[in-house]
Length: 250
Image (cartoon, rainbow, N blue to C red):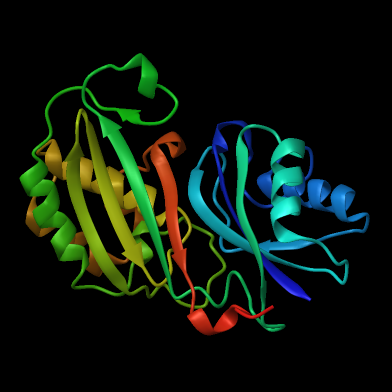
C-alpha cells in the first residue's frame, strides 16, 4: 500500500530535505524513524527538496509498505521518536500511483522579514536595516504574474527541462512587526523564491525600479536579478493535490 505522510519541520538544524552524504537531512531522519517503527526498510519521496535551513509549515511525502498499522498510533509513535524539530500531522492511504512530488498541483511559500532588530526572530526571519517601500515591492510583485519563464531567478547549473512556472499569487503583507512575502505557483525552480525576494527588496530599497523587473525577466540571466536572501526566512507553507488520490473509505 502507498501512504501519504503530512508533516512540518524547523529546517535550522537540517541540511535540507534530501538525503546527502555526511549531513543530516529531514528525509534521512524520517526514513530511519519509519524503518524502526515499521520494522522494515522504508524509503520516502517528498513533495520538494528544500535547501539547508529552509523550513516547512506543511509538506507531504509518500512511502510504500505492506505492514498493517493504525495511522493515529503511528503518528503518535513517530512524534515521540522524532526530534522536536519535526512534527507529523497525518498519515493516510492513497492510490497506488499517487506521487507526492509529481501529483502536486500547487505549492506555496512565505518569506519573513523584520526591519527592526528582534532577538526572537533571529533564526526565523531575515533582518533588514532601514525602511522598505512596500508599495513599490508589491507593484514589482504584480509584474511577476505576467511572465512564465523564470530562468533569471533560477540557481545556475540546475538540471531542469523547463524554466516555465505558472505563478498564481505574489504579494507582501504586514503581520505585526513582520513583513511577509507570500507566493504560490504550480512549481518553483531551485532558489527561485529567495532570488525573487532579494530582487524585490532591492526595489523596496530604491536600488531597482519597476521597469527593471521586466528587463531582468526578459534577460533570462541570473546575474541581472537581485541577491539571494538567507534560507532562515523561507517557509514552504502548502502543497495541494487532487482529491482523487486519497482513498477515503480505507
